[in-house]
Length: 192
Image 1 (cartoon, rainbow, N blue to C red):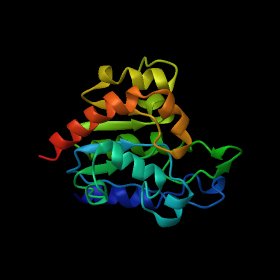
Image 2 (image 1 turned 30 degrees about the horizontal axis):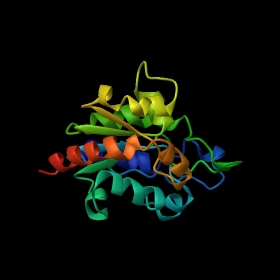
Image 3 (image 1 turned 90 degrees about the vertical axis):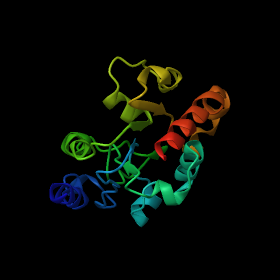
Image 4 (image 1 turned 180 degrees about the vertical axis):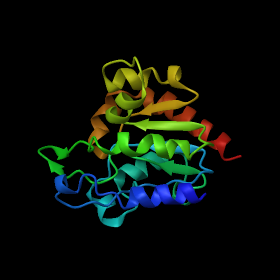
């Protein structure tokens, strides 16, 4: 446990991108070696950066609905770990937040994954996580998420739960009709 604790401390004190982050470093991560589910998202938004609580925003509300769990279970690191592609808020871009910083995943992901031996399901949220973890995947996020069954039991690709994706959800009703119930079923089994 000491090596896990020191790793988490190192991640939370990381300054690798400090010169590139206008809002400063505040790595956001949630993990414990007992965790059964791992969420690999993009990067914290401004509200998450300000509070230090992952998915403490509208995206988090929708993600918890998709998963069929409440905040208590979602924020229990013994059940669920959260490791974004970029641990800090990347800043504001022309149309939304900037992409996750590229330094984080190579620096921290493999080390943290080694300390999470009980993970049974990894939710890959958005294009950045899917591009990093899925080999030979289709080119678009929609095609990748449509092919979700081929990545199970280890991975489950999801679109980002941001309200900015409401149009995508309306164009792809199969996602909430087919994939979300399956996701909720897997998570219910993992709670037993």
